[in-house]
Amino acid sequence: MNNLIRGHVSPETAYTVDDYPYGRHRTQCRWWLETATKGSHKGQTRVMQQTLDPKRNVWNKPHASTYAETMVLYIEDGTGHCKNWGIGFYAKDLVAFVQSGLYFQCNADELACLEGWIKYGRRLDRTSWGRFGWLVDKARAGLTVAQIMEAAKTERTEDHYLYESDAQQALALVEAERAAGKQVNTCRPALTA
Image (cartoon, rainbow, N blue to C red):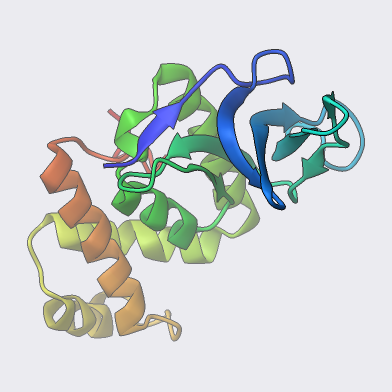
């Protein structure tokens, strides 16, 4: 299972690997999360990566990823590589994050941050999040994809954009919940623990 790593928020506190490839040489590489404090990306996070020049023994210019609403660093199971996971406002982002197993490793502060972005996403797109919440409720009730699609014909007649893939995502989220023995907060009043 992939493992979250925390506390890496500056070059001084970065997650560092000593045996990183650098051309024909090996060197150090470090990763940390940077949160924007101003501008259009205020509050969003990106990953910074920086290598040590083995010839001059100075740190090269850091490379920045694109911003995401929230982001985590984790160690990939099997390879031991440092990876990042960005989460946006969309239900599919939440489903993928839950399926990765990383959601259930988040502490209270990380979950509060994630739930804040989900609430923001729900305000931006009430229709798709409302649809997703309805699907999750049906999946938690034990319905199959076919049963969910049949229920949609009578219960959600106004919703012309309900696809089987949406129902499959909801079922995947519920299966991941059951495997972890915990429920995901999709920031709907009826589901908030």
